[in-house]
Amino acid sequence: MNYWSTLQAMQRPSCLALPKTTKDVSIIMTVLTSLRAPFTVKAGGHTAFTGGSNIDDGITIDLVHLNETSVSDDRRTVSVGPGARWVNVSTVLDPMNLAVLGGRDANVGVAGLLLGGGFSFFSSRHGWACDNVRKYEVVLASGKVVYASPLENPDLYKALRGGGGSSFGIVTRFDLEALEQGNLWTNTLIFPSNKYASVAEKFTDLVIKDLDTDLDAHTYFVMINSAAFGGPVALVSFYHSVPPPKDEVPSVFQPFQSLPGAFVNTTLVSNVTTLSKAISNPYGHRRTWSDLSFRLTSAETLNAVIQVWEQANVKMSAAAGKGYFISNLANQPITKSMMTASQKNGGNSLSLNPEDGPLIDAHFSAEWDNPQLDDFMLNTVQEMATSAKEITKREGVTSNFVYMNYAGHWQDPLRDYGEESYKNLQKVSAKYDPEGTLKKLWKDYFRV
Ligand SMILES: Cc1cc2nc3c(=O)[nH]c(=O)nc-3n(C[C@H](O)[C@H](O)[C@H](O)COP(=O)(O)OP(=O)(O)OC[C@H]3O[C@@H](n4cnc5c(N)ncnc54)[C@H](O)[C@@H]3O)c2cc1C
Ligand SMILES: *[C@@H]1O[C@H](CO)[C@@H](O)[C@H](O)[C@H]1NC(C)=O
Ligand SMILES: *[C@@H]1O[C@H](CO)[C@@H](O)[C@H](O)[C@H]1NC(C)=O
Ligand SMILES: *[C@@H]1O[C@H](CO)[C@@H](O)[C@H](O)[C@H]1NC(C)=O
Ligand SMILES: *[C@@H]1O[C@H](CO)[C@@H](O)[C@H](O)[C@H]1NC(C)=O
Image (tube, rainbow, N blue to C red; front, side, top):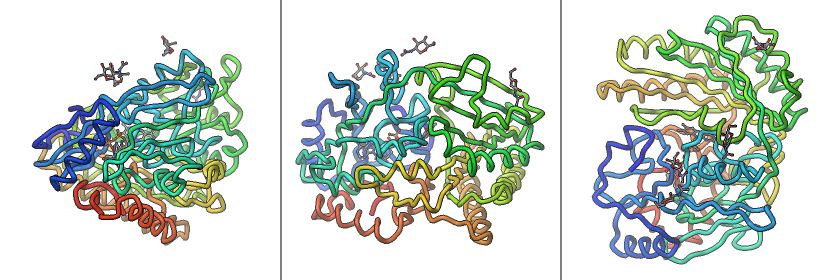
């Protein structure tokens, strides 16, 4: 079994189930529920925390063999198995000049990303990855196979768009909307940490003023504390799905090019496969993460959130000593256009309102090797998110939204979608799993 985080790889299920077909999944579900056997489901295995998609003394259903990618004859729909990795999908699509809204890291799994939302290179124009699912094939707690689309079981269709899987069933196929797409342009700049305030200022301008004027643009801003860089640095990456003429920079990103001090400045024009391999985060190491979001109205909040990260990093670096340790704070815009695009097909379960935008999703994470640091790292990353949240409250720019796919084990992202969405998810869960079987047996991930 292939887990990204050592905390999951260390777990020991008593039994592994390896379905090859939807029918197998249905049989497995029927057997497990009749035996009242605790289980979990693994797709790409990229959850950071213990129990996210593995289990001790229970059954892990590993969907690794449900990995097919196929394109419809009219090129409009791409069907993918839940156990495929995004690189497996792009390897099929790139040569056809097609793409889907999916993960940006080669090895991340299809199912987890799509069930929680999905930041993609193409999100400005098309919304979250989940907004671009045409249809789901789902095995319910009863073992019955159903479909969910705007026309068939529309309530389940909406719930699966951001509501996770474990309250509803095991998704065995996703039919995704295809985009005509050639190579993308990308540029990454890395600055020493003493420049982060000027990066934050430009990034704030970009997100507030410019990003919504060019729906082909995508960006994120990450603070990284790694021995490889000799301490904290500020990384900003830009993507454009329509490459500019050679040696030019798309105009939305031009303001960054005059920032002095970048010690890395890499530009590449290539396919999704190459770009997703280039940013892929290697396997191994103990991991944790936590998430929050806030309304971006000025660079001050962003700077204050980065200061929380910086201060905690002094403490974390000291605790790790010479041992392996990396910590990140990834700031990702959720633009008004992205939220507007999300309203197609009846909207998703995240229930974000374009009028509240743009938001920044701030994702705190850490990785280390020394088991004695487990509690300290888990607590410190949780504390960073909690302190940053307090700052956003104080400044009146708080948002309740927590992105499920980056949420810590201690968070409750579905409830944070708000009362209306949460109640709806509960209703749909009760309709498709009337006995609450999944709640009892499917362990340890976010659910209603
Ligand atoms: C290195 C890295 C890069 C990332 N990049 C991005 C990114 O670019 N954009 C983004 O939005 N997110 C990104 N993420 C977050 C990612 O979306 C989540 O970690 C996601 O849960 C991973 O999906 P998975 O299938 O690999 O995980 P898993 O751990 O296998 O699954 C996640 C959850 O989904 C459940 N599940 C799995 N399969 C099914 C199914 N078929 N039916 C029902 N439930 C199921 C599991 O039980 C588990 O609870 C990244 C994460 C990492 C570690
Ligand atoms: C899918 O899984 C099968 C069986 O495990 C494997 O042989 C095949 O190479 C996989 N395909 C992809 C695209 O990963
Ligand atoms: C699918 O992706 C995985 C993870 O990157 C890789 O190991 C595997 O070889 C890929 N399968 C195929 C058939 O390309
Ligand atoms: C993607 O681009 C790389 C580099 O240009 C090329 O070698 C590779 O074959 C392409 N991959 C696919 C799947 O088209
Ligand atoms: C990156 O390199 C390009 C081309 O050499 C240059 O024009 C640009 O100013 C550089 N950007 C930064 C931020 O240093």
